[in-house]
Image (cartoon, rainbow, N blue to C red; front, side):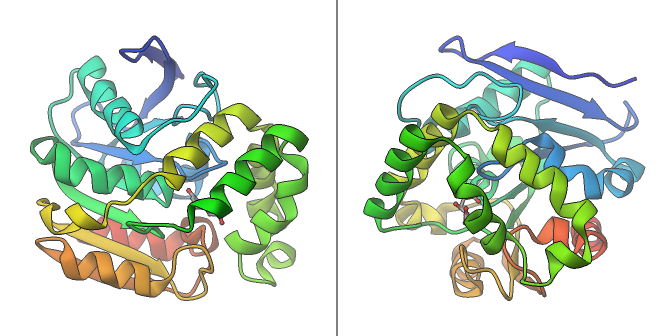
Length: 261
Ligand SMILES: O=C(O)CCC(=O)CC(=O)O
């Protein structure tokens, strides 16, 4: 049975990961969004493991990974993904990341394209300014913890009636957010605060599918189209969802990813 394992990144931060699916299958690497864990991919696991050996990890600051104090950077988060591949001895993967995970994907597409077959960037953006908004969020979470963020986050992550229509899908996501280490969450907020991947977006080399949510107030369809227009071989697909489109449109998300791969 698959279990969560850990490896140490080059600064000693322990990163948690797990494999699921047939050992002989090609590897699909999944990267989580801000305030969630590798369990955010639960709605796709049955479908993805039909064809792939799925490698999921908790981004530093999240889940069972360490949460070092201080600001992280997108370089740091991108290097963690490369170091994970090195640690498990996998040379090349297909990649799917949502929001912050998609920012890591943009970084990989430019900085480590030789490690990536196809890239799927869901509900993400090359820039999420202004920095002052992130700074306020960092100060708030370090002062007051995760609790006060929860309901506003859920309201951005799902369309208005989804939580009452599918409480069983939303409850685990709320739990992940509330269990998040405030210092790890703040570290990742700093990485987004300081991120501007726009100057290098045209250097994304792998074939790229961008998935956008037509009702996503965090990373818009326009943000997704902007990326798809710049990636060397980019394409855009829209789902009727808010930010966590893989939870709200679980089957459609899985079908789109598997069709593309
Ligand atoms: O979701 C992410 O990974 C980063 C973007 C974000 O903060 C979305 C949100 O909380 O609305």
